[in-house]
Length: 364
Image 1 (cartoon, rainbow, N blue to C red):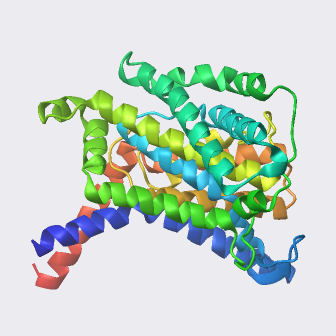
Image 2 (cartoon, one colour):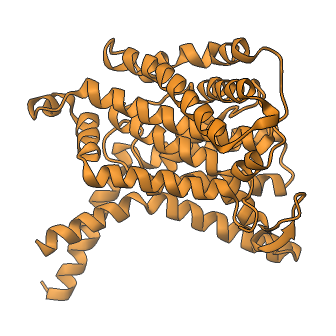
């Protein structure tokens, strides 16, 4: 029993090797670079007074954790879709624009000059409901019609922002309200950015769901072998649809964060290109892009690594259009490192080293 528990912990830790290694490399790179140029400001954390007169935490690390909040939430949902379906949803940015449009439209119906906690809750629930409809559309194509996820989600990837434009038109109303600022930035009297708390709440909620239900086990089983899952009484279609429902909730929450942070809706730029970063976060998190076992902690860590990489490249004055190329290189390296062929070679090498060390201890 103890050996099984030890083996399970060892397996779980092995999934975090990639994100921990990537994080370590980035930290060391910025440390040595800071020493070389005589500026370690990358790691500095302090306080400042924002435009509302509130004292808040400031610094590169705080900005990285704060800016990665929307990405981390979407990446959690993307992890479940990837684990269950063996593919990725590339329409999350466009669907996020639809969600943001619904959120702003409902707030506008209540009156932008009379925003209250109640109107925000109603707007968020409406956005979640509409977003789930669209993610279920994707899920139906994947689970019922057996279309590969990336192809199925290409439809909304292409037309999602146009749908968002149809909902609100060309209007970009300003959401200048204290409650909106509290959601997208900081709550007065609390120096930590609010989006960080929303990431923690979402992570704890999913952890609770996994604790009290068999969703994690069922999702992993469907992702590994649908035939075996069906023989064990698990309906792969239901599990896949449920993963898309959870993704819809994550997209809505992330969209609300970005709208509240910017105090306005922009159909073109809201969550733009976030699908690539979400897929990269899943990969960096040590999760297989082909489905199966997953760890949300690795995905969240991967999201922060991506923002740290982006921040590092910006500090090095890398052109914005070149940053995507660097990210693509990271994806290639991670996908190759996590491929079955490489894992098999590493496992064989580890077994040889382990058996050699045992022989040296026993003297045989």
